[in-house]
Image (tube, rainbow, N blue to C red):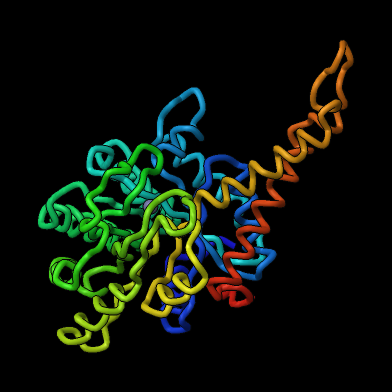
Length: 340
Ligand SMILES: [Zn+2]
């Protein structure tokens, strides 16, 4: 099912209160969208599918236009999610300031037109990533976008601190290591500028050493306790309030770090690299196992049952779905669908 804005809010509240988190799976095609939704259904978990600006541009094919691609993904999502027995929310991932006018703001405009017609917003939530700006400017733009989102029943995700690594051309490998760890002071500035929910619901990508991409063990030094320090600081000034954190760059994290992050209030865990790998690994396995069917070897004609993109596509989607279902088990969202 495609959750209503109220149902999406109930999903997030349920995770915050229940001490679990939703995987948010990056998708770039109908195949990876279906794989993610299949994984959520297999786990009996609600979940989030999301697209980056670069992913949306790829999805748009020859149009090479991220806005077109995002609108196309939303159309697919609205049509297909309705057929699943779990709630699937639609989200757009990192939108840096330089893409806001051509991507994020037009998507909000499209949702405004839909709302005026009595329809649901195009997406359930959008991320504005102002981490390249000084924090006061980041929060100024974020606050303005939060006002717009609130009026449309859309949740805004913002970033405070810098996620290391590189994803779809955003970020770079050389981020100074102290910028990878946000501080309680900065998190309190977020609460000061955006409130704690009363001015519109937002998700907070606070950084605690997390890095995009998949690395060898030991490369990434996560400090999830930073998230707990932020909750403690917030509790001192805003009794009963909790940040709804997002964990970017979860690929390769230990189960212990994942558990700790969720315990400190992470409700959304982005998963990209490991899902990509699961998809491609299965496709590669098919190619190696059916070498003489997918290739027209020595003047042969190959085997349509092997080279039909649906044949290896189904294997790739099944493997990615299994990885998504595993994430639901790890994060505790499995078996808790609001649609059940
Ligand atoms: Zn990210």
